[in-house]
Image 1 (cartoon, one colour):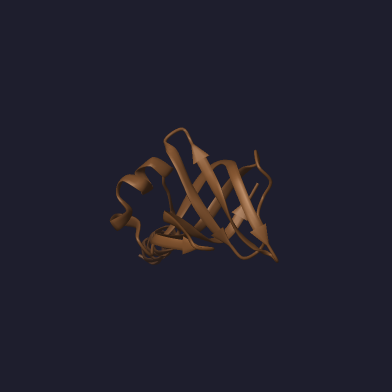
Image 2 (tube, rainbow, N blue to C red):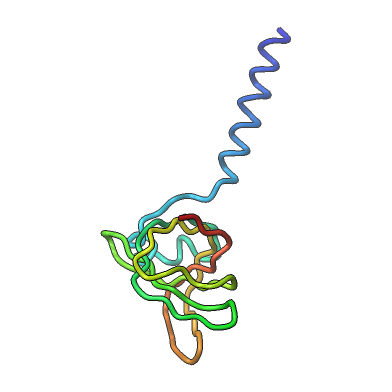
Amino acid sequence: MRTRSLGLVLVSVCAVLLSACPSEVSIGKLNSDPGRYHNREVVIRGTVLNAYGALGQGVYEVGDESGSIWVLTQRGVPTKGARVRVIGKAVSGVTWAGRTLGNAVQEKNRQY
């Protein structure tokens, strides 16, 4: 009985931890249904196509085989051509430096 209870607790803890992880999504899917992901944490992967930054802040464009999206950052921009994995919040109607970017991801974390 005790082993069964322990197993149930472990399964429950794993389910909670996995549900807290952001979902990896293709950029094309994110762009085609922005309302589904709005203000939700997502993971995207791709290559940096463009990057603009100053004073530790900036935006960079990430592309995969399905499309491209802008990423807003407050920790400097990666170099053009870098492969990145970005964790962040999906946002819509973003304007940066007087330029409307449409859909974007507000970076929380980045890995190379």
